[in-house]
Length: 217
Image 1: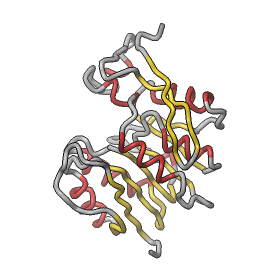
Image 2 (image 1 turned 90 degrees about the vertical axis):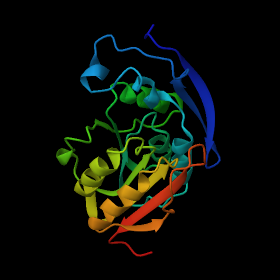
Image 3 (image 1 turned 180 degrees about the vertical axis):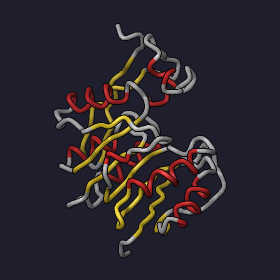
């Protein structure tokens, strides 16, 4: 037994149904070798990666129809990697990343569960960055602004991982930190192409924020 309980959910994106293994609930926790603790992940945060969140579902649905031709794509804070799985199923050049020690395990399991080619994965600490990862045409993420400081950290990381012409797609449930990210990305030349600057609205449906640099439209 791995020390935590899981469940299998059926989720539909773009007309395709995926079987997704997730943690049974938010009460699950297992860190016998202290890998999560060493990564700075507390017991209260441990289970967050393994849940199906509305923002993650919205991003996956958006990726089921997004133009991916010729694009190298990175998902930040992938968690279960719903969007990465959808993109890989479509044949995209996608790299998933997260900081949780079990994110790669769940991502690989879910790819195999749905007969999807393995999704390339990189463990990524937002603070130290990923200079060896190269640069991307599109960077996507969902619900990554759940702490106030994350907007500032991502505003430093995203430009470092972006090609001169790049699109950023972030699904956010309205925790109030998207405005800060928008301002910081504007300083790096990214224009908010879609999404609405607004105060936090807990419990409201998530929305997509799309930023572009060096692209028409």
